[in-house]
Image 1 (cartoon, rainbow, N blue to C red):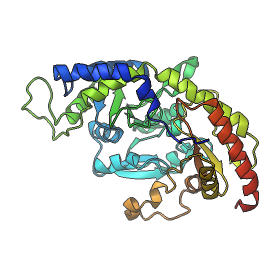
Image 2 (spheres, helix red, strand yellow; image 1 turned 90 degrees about the vertical axis):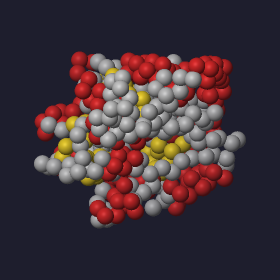
Image 3 (tube, rainbow, N blue to C red; image 1 turned 30 degrees about the vertical axis):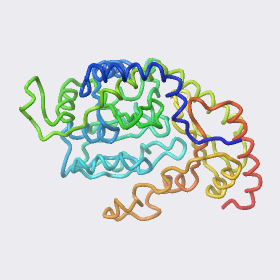
Image 4 (cartoon, rainbow, N blue to C red; image 1 turned 120 degrees about the vertical axis):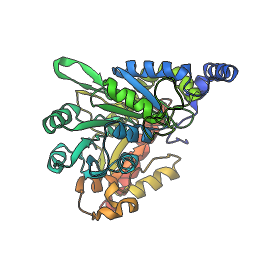
Length: 381
């Protein structure tokens, strides 16, 4: 059996008729730039997240970058982010002219380590960017309490967590993207809510931030006069065709996430207790959406290769934490500076996960992983 790691085709085939109709409508009207579908999708996505406003942008990276700019963060400022994440989290800080300050991760959740976060706060700290990694929410209630105590802004990197939620006080479930000052999402084709190209979104409950984001994404313009520019803005608009396609997909996002959760829980039942395999942690007060199903295994590269021989495509992601990336060599970090991140990066293995993954494929992957791990027992470090 051949099991792909990802499947970006099936949902597009499923929605082919609706998607083609939406694209044809735009082609016929010529409503290409900041068209009606952009405005409608912004409203729909904001409502989905439980936020007042949403601004469509051309990528998740720009959502982070524009959010920092809209909060007035720049040279001389420090912004805290986890060291184990996709590099775009840190790059957005660098683009704004600020300095990223790396923090280790919780070895169970792979999200930002709260104790290390508190240790890194100083007078130059202006913001925190927690990352909801692999679809698992960071501990936003604690992060927001810390941020309020130190008068810091919070930008949620929710690029991998569309629809993930956290239980708030009083038993209310609140989606990611509505906790911090701004929430940032990506619609890259592999995401839970995926476009057919690049795209991003920033959500906020603050009208001033919303209006500032609108300016930054559209070359500094505001109002009806298109030739007056109030800031040196950027061309970072969500394409109308992408918005139209995403409007069709968001109708199915919760159902697709439920499939992911079901497949993930089946993986965990089959793999729990297997020597050398650590399944993803999930607490009772969070709603994990399993953008990726990430396990920890000993002798990871050997396991990855052996599974590939059996037709199982797995993913090795973020194998080099940010402090060891050549792009950030000027920060002069060394191996050992962030032990949890380094240990995770060495052992992480992502099993096939998508909304069209079959139960039979999950069972095939799990059975083969168990068999490989038994043969791997004498190779573990």
